[in-house]
Amino acid sequence: MFNIENAAIQIKDLLTRATGVLIITRADPSVDGAAASLALAAVSAGMGHPVILVTPSELSEQVKVLPGAGKFATSLPARSLVISLAHKPGSIDKVSYQDGGDKFNMVVTPRAGQLLNPDQVSFSSLGESYDLVIVVGTPDQALLGSIYESEKDHWSEIPVINIDRHGANTQYGKINLIDHEAASVSEVTARALLASKINITPEVARLLLTGIKDATNSYEQAGPSDFETAGKLSQITSGVKGESTEERLVNEPFRRGEQFKSAPAI
Image (cartoon, rainbow, N blue to C red; front, side, top):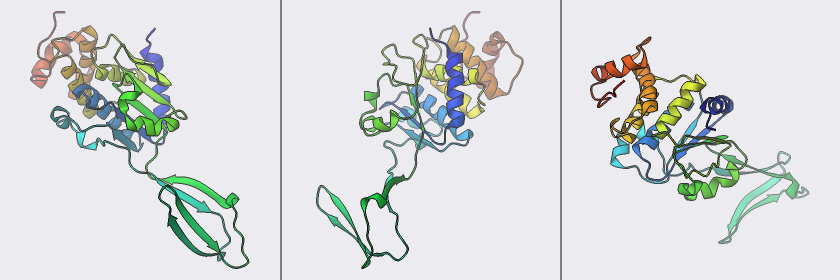
């Protein structure tokens, strides 16, 4: 049975312990998926984490207008391979390389009387790194294309959080935050953040409201859960406290103009 509270606790714990976060959504993301991804990126950055935000394709014109959309990359930043050689100072005569087509050879020549062996060589990488992956609005990792293919070995060793609403989701994450009854992934994301007690800024709340609004056709296809979540987010954006959900739904159209196209019957 779907339990957002349990998942929220685990997500908060993983975000707290992360040193770098990759947030990725499917190619040609919807406004909803992109807004939820941007909101999670802002939350992660607010917790002090370096964030890599990726989608495998160029953004649509509708998505490009979202605040922060320019932070999306279409590929992961290159990481350099560092080859280290343990040695005594002054023991190396010269370093050269040979490009053999399908093999690149680095040649380290020791000074006369010095010996080098493979046990002295180690490898590492240099560049942006991450130890937590959040995949947003993506039912299957195959929808991430070459990015998943290049990173799947790394992903098998670190936590992957899978946030989605699609019934066809393959449940590939360590944490699968999937609500098939939700109208938007922004709603699922918002409910998780609210349940986790992670600080939600007005910027994050506005992004999530935008995603919910777009996915529900300006609330015309919204259900009770959408309005309940939107009401809580609207309270954050307006700074109003102490209102009931019903009061927020009535008052919010006047505060934010077209934020709610119509209010439901209570």
